[in-house]
Amino acid sequence: MTELRLAELNRIFLVGRLTKDPEVRQTTNGTPVANFTIAVNRRYKNAAGEWKDETTFVGIVTWQKLAELCKQYLAKGRAVLVEGKLLSHSWETEDGQKRTLLEVRADRVEFLDRGESRPAAEPAAGAP
Image 1 (cartoon, rainbow, N blue to C red):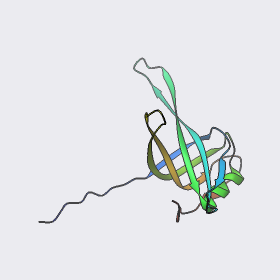
Image 2: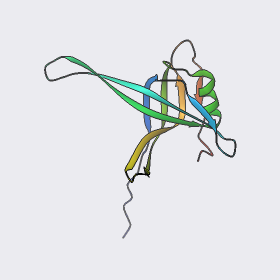
Image 3: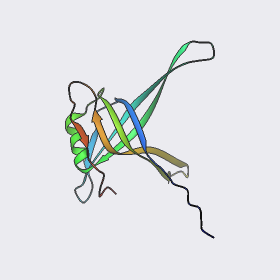
């Protein structure tokens, strides 16, 4: 009997604005990594017919050449389209509390405003 395997997909597309400038560092082996957060807004009507705004803050991480491009071209308030995969990190604090963090490891970041139409598209090959 053959085993039925379900296809899995972990792909996310987000459009939002940076909440602050990207933070860029080097790993111990010299690989650049950039972290930033984007605010993704959703506007909807509630049951009473009133417009409501909801904001979700999403952490983004980029590696290698893409990290360097984000450092060079992005700043607080810039609009971006991010494509990547959703990752989960879990750990335990010193006082024994369990924590979980969701973030997006970006494979592509496109700059959407201020005349900067240059995409920062770079595969995440070699990213840890």
